[in-house]
Length: 159
Image (cartoon, rainbow, N blue to C red):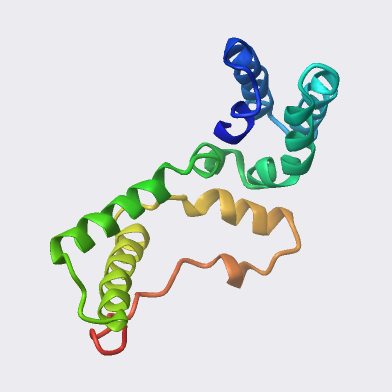
């Protein structure tokens, strides 16, 4: 959204943002693509940079709609990734200066492993039930959608 709105004059940003949000609330990917293309087509004459960016980004922006509806609200946002990046930065700031590149890799690896353990064991970021429904409805192998195995804890040297 930020990338698209950067191509729009300030006076029109709220109107364009509202129109783009309309695509995100559609129940199906086909309907969302239809609205997305209609917005891009209407912007061709007045906002050509916006129209071009929308045409180029359509597949990437609407890719989350192939997932179950229960997961979409979590997938179309980057809040989780931003939170993880802040945690890595916070831990790196505590250390200050790293003696070598391997120490940075160990620290970031430990933070990412900790986050993975938390997401897989404590609170499911994406619940398993909608994914299991996909396996039953589609041709996917159920083994691919099985719950993750107990994570192996790594020693600092292995990280």
